[in-house]
Image (cartoon, rainbow, N blue to C red):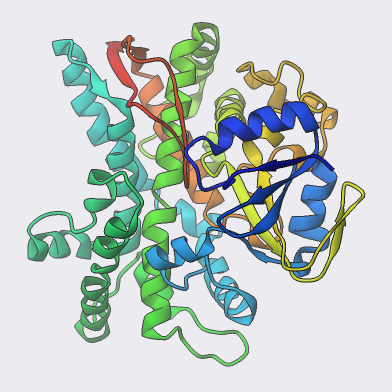
Amino acid sequence: MATAEFDVGSTDDSLERMIQLFAKHGDIYRVYVPARKAFTYVVHHPDDVKRILVSNHRNYTKGVGLDRVKILLGNGIMTSEGELWRRQRMMLQPLFHRRVISGFAETIAAATDALLERWEELARRGEPVNLTEEMSELTLEIVLKAIFGRDLERLSAEFGGNPFGVVTKEPARNLEFAYKFRSLTRLVASLIAHRRTDGVEHLDFVAMLMNARDKETGAPMSERELIDEIMTLVVAGHETTASGLNWTWYLLAQHPQVEAKLHAELDSAPQAAERAPSLAQLEQLTYLRQVIDEALRLYPPGWVLSRRTIEPDVLCGYTIPAGTNVLLPLYLLHRHPRYWSEPDQFRPERFAPQHEAERPRFAYMPFAAGPRHCIGETFALYEMLMHVQRVARRLRLVQVPGPPLELEALINLRTRHPVIMRLERR
């Protein structure tokens, strides 16, 4: 088996080097990681991805990088393992049912419409916008209102501003950021205590988390579990969606023919006039969904998955020892030339129903797959569909020339430099 040597997954150029190694070695290779004095295996074949995430998932735990995420998020659903994870997943799953997510339609619509009103004024004045920053602030606003509801205004008043603004103001995800973010757990703890005595009915994620019960014991979450799940929702519900929207608008600006086809669909759709279209209505906009799927294929925000074997396993015909880290680079899986024609091209039509049989099920999975697939997938898609639908009906986003596109592949796949757009009224 081909072998390389570097701290894969921990260096700024990890993705760049993995692209080169995949082109040279194909579906599996291993990297000796000096910092850990161990091999990490990198796997790209959909059959092996399915085995790791679905058919043999019990033989895998979360892999390298988990410790850093735990410092930030505690022991929430993203980082927990074993029985704790199964219990929490069962308690959280009902919160993300389509019916529940549809209840946040007004929250998503109101935030998007406020942004759209401001953007239309900027369009009149000919002022550009920092799209990357705007998408980050928009998605943070939406997820915070969905989590905290009416209490967000009270928290902001007590704190002297949005207490979670650190998430957008400090892009680095280092120990200093983790300390500042975790310090907000005191604020969340006081909110939970206030909720337990105020006697007011709330319709938000905090209320649903507080009301969640273990199906077997009937027990609620402990305060520590509640806090960790809330903090996880803040980060996980914001950054990936912001990155997905940033890439979607970037790609539309680069491909005017795709943009024109999207505009034609939106202009002819009856739900265009809806105050807050339902998820089912937005899903009828088939080309819009194809555009978003294609953006997530080319630039999956969670660009790599990490797992660790419990017992030995066989992948691509090779025996992987117990206790070994395995990386699944979704960025490369989504561009695998065996399963995607012209894999680097932005072609939303490849997601039309008649083309689904052309590739294996596990060649595309921006929200992962199996028991640990992203629990917030429906919320994220609803948010992206409604935002693009409402904005693209009224505005065109035209990229302002700037530095060449560079990928920043750290925890999430982002543009290294902000994307600046000029706004044009349609």
